[in-house]
Structure formats: C-alpha cells, structure tokens
Length: 485
Ligand code: ADP
Image (cartoon, rainbow, N blue to C red):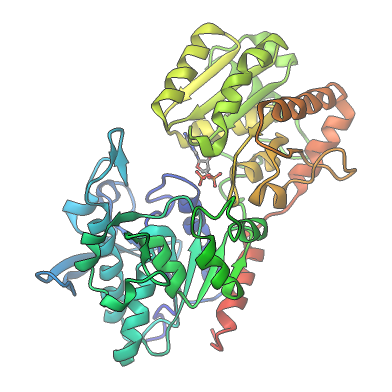
C-alpha cells in the first residue's frame, strides 16, 4: 500500500524512453524531481517498440489488463520499469505503438492517431483503476493524453473509486490539438453531452486538446508569459475562448532545465568539459565542432551561430534561412541541426552546398550532436514565432552560448535582454528578418568586446532554472485541492 502512487503523470513521451521534443524532456525530469523530494509519483506512457529492446528492462506486471471500450473490449499488457527508483508504467498494444515513428511519417499523420490515443487514455485509466488505492492527482499532458480528463470527469459521477481524485492538464504546445472527425467521437466512449462548444466539440470536429482544457480541474502551461498569450486571438490557436472561460483555473509554471543531462561541466558527449570559472574547454569544443562538421578552422576566431530544433515555421527557421547568406558574408559560421518540413530540409542542404566550410547542416535527430552544438557554438538562435517555454535556450545559457531570441512565451521569461546590465542574451520584438538580423548584429558587436562577452556568458551560465522550483509550484497546485501529499 505504501508505495502506491498518489500522483500519476500520463504522457505520450518520456526521455530517455521516447522523445520527439520538449515534452519528453519535461516528463523525464519533473516527476523524478518530485519523487526525489519524497512524493509518490509514477508515469504512464506508451510502450513504443524499441523500449523493450533497449537496455531499460521493463518487467511485465499486468497481462491482458482489460481496457473498457465502447466497441469490443480490448486489453493491454503493462510493463513496469524502475527509473532511478520511480515507477514508470508502459502500456503495450503493438498495433498502436510498435511503429517506426511516434505520430507521423514523412507522408503525414498516422491515419489512426485518434484511435491510438483514445486507447492510450482509456488504458491509463484502466491501469490506475487496478491500483490498490486511487491516485489523488492525475496529471496529463498535451493532446495525446487530454481525454483522460473528460473520461475521469464523467467517471467521477458514477464510479466511487474516482471520487477523491483531482485532475491537472498541462499544455506544452497549443498548436497541436489532435483534431479529428466527429465520427471518431461516437466511438470514444464519452457521453453525448460532451459534444458541445464547452466540451470536446470544435466547429464540428472532435478536439482532444480542448477536451483536456474543458474538463480538467486545473490547467497549466509551461511559462507565465505563454499563459497570458494563449488567452488572446494572436496566440490562442482558436481556443482562446475556452481558455478565457477557464482562465481562473489556468496557471503558467516555468519549465526547468535538467542539469543532470545538460551541464557542460559533466557532459559526456563533449570533447572537453568546462564551467563558468574555466571556459577553456568551450574553446576545445568549438575546435572539435568545426572539425567534425568540416567547417573552416578560420572560424575558430570568428563567431559561429547555432540552431537546434524542429524545422518548422513555429521555430522561425525560414527567417534564419533568409539570413544565412548575410551571415556568411559577415564571415560568421552557421550550424543547424533539425528535421521537419522537407522544403526547409532541402533549403538547408542547398545552403550547405553553396557555402561549404561556412555552413553546416545536419538533417535528422541526434541527441549527441545537440550537446556538441550547444557547447561548440558562440551564439544560439531561436527566432520562434511562439514558444510555450523552450528548453534549448535554457541549455544554451548553461553552455555559455548566449541566445538571440524573439520576445515570446518562455523566451521572455528566461532571457534577460541586452543592454540590461544583467543581460544573458538578446531579444527582438517581432519575428521579422530585419529585426532578427539587427539583434544578431548586436550580439556580433558585443562578441568583439571579449570582456563584456565573457561576462555575459558567465551570467548566463550561472542562471539557475532548476526543476525543483517548478516541482514545488506543481506540488503547491496539487495541495491546493486539499490533499496532504
Ligand atoms: P519543442 O518542444 O517545441 O520541440 P523545446 O526547445 O522545448 O522545443 O525542446 C526541444 C528539445 O528537443 C531539446 O531537448 C532539443 O535539444 C531537442 N531537439 C530538437 N530537435 C532536435 C534534433 N534535430 N536533434 C536532437 N535534439 C533535438
């Protein structure tokens, strides 16, 4: 009884078991931080194919656990791994999760995403119902896990097991909503009354994220600024109305940075380690990066800028693409790591060919290169059109690579902009090429002043975005329901 989880995280990705972006980073560290603080936490996530073959050794703990379904009843096998002492439950259903990609291929989304994640949410509820005691908090994340909230909302009406459970739903990116045909609503097992403009319906489509927003007891998002932005039409992605209705239950809690993984003083991927009181290793990392990517060694004494992220409009990669020739003409090196829209992938490869030795592009997803680039570049670029929190700028601060970023969401909340005397980076107001270029030029100018640059680097490296502070805020939110956790 004693080790029964009281707080259950439900999410579609968790680093190091699975990852396609920042959500995985958060789920890989936030619950663990709570666990280390003494709370009884677990994570529930899909069993993607390669998890069993990797070195994690999950054990089968429930075979053929029944998953209530409106159509013929189905089952899930449940595996459990101890992740640094915290239980992680993996829900297995091969035909849904044993695939090459998580959500989509280059041809587009998997056609059965709605069915896959309806299954995931219902299987998560079935698992939690198999526990000896009900969890006090079910904390679900993003559209894939959003339906947990309406399901539990209606379960609480007639199923006494759930009557003392509260729900929290976190939005990591409002733009990904999981919108499907009404046809799929009829089979999902929610009552007809959920189909209305204050429920899961969005202009005749079935909107999973909206279901999370409408039915969770509390809603959070990943930075205070993003919480303010998403109730406006500019950033609300069409859901600003329901978010405004629920604004008294909406809170922004800034993500943290996992310094167990992202710390240049102990990063095992780096050529050399370094810290703010001895930056020599950063120089060696730059040298290594230039060699690794066949960049001119003349760039060792010139600024090299880096970009890591999805090659999507959200990240403003088009703004960077437009500027690459200008940057090269200023004798600045450019390194881009990312994957996403094929038109940007192709454009990037063309840039590499046109500016051999000055521009390096890696199309793909490689954790190791992300670390090597964070350490080996001088300036980190993040011209996002919106950014719920953004983790890469927090990593770049810690790696002594001051960011140049747009004044949106979590970027505003984590970077102190030049010319403030405490500045840790550079911020520009609108995601326009000219503004971006002006701000990069400010960074390049400061780079020329070695002392001032070093001071900025040190301030950034000393900034502390540890997860403990975020975890404490979430615990406070949970305890506000009246639980003694
Ligand atoms: P988002 O979640 O919007 O993609 P974040 O900045 O919150 O953006 O988190 C992105 C995470 O994914 C970071 O850990 C970053 O290093 C990683 N990442 C993004 N693209 C790549 C890539 N191509 N290769 C390796 N890591 C990547």
